[in-house]
Length: 215
Image (cartoon, rainbow, N blue to C red; front, side):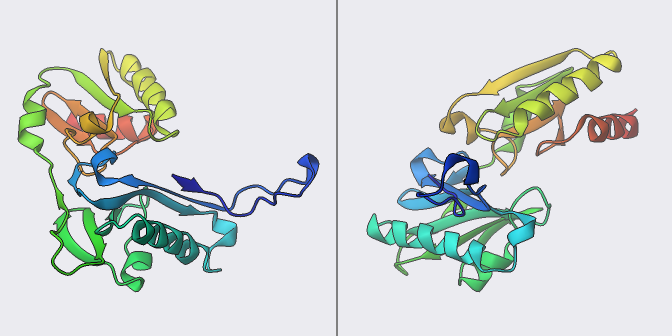
């Protein structure tokens, strides 16, 4: 589910206001994150355009999700945050009285429970088991859940070809498959010779820098 404030229903097409923020969330059983969160809503993404930050829009979007969770009689709301700028940080959620229940650096699983006796969500990352499936060569595990991933896959594939590497792209086509990836990011990973070398989308330039350090 997503919410994009900023567009007015009665505006003429030429005057349509571009969205300034969005939130996407779903039920725990359908989450594209390697978490066990049955009975919770899980936030995939919460973003506010940089020009409109500091106006309380992030808190407003989060409140919509919390109200939806209560209306749906969920146990609470969970979210994976990261100190990496590619994902939402923890500050907004901590201000809303979310608490940390598990950490796999740089990722942190936060939750706001509506019932104290509800079980905590948890990560279900089994990195060693997943990496054993991919031996020699370069493998990109990628879902279409995030629109930025397609470009990253293309850029990495082109960069790897320039390095003389053959790239295998494994499509992650369901929430269940995403929960089997080797990182809490859940919808993207790059594995090289059985080692995780990127746990979230990276540019072709960043990929080349990673490979140069491995050489």
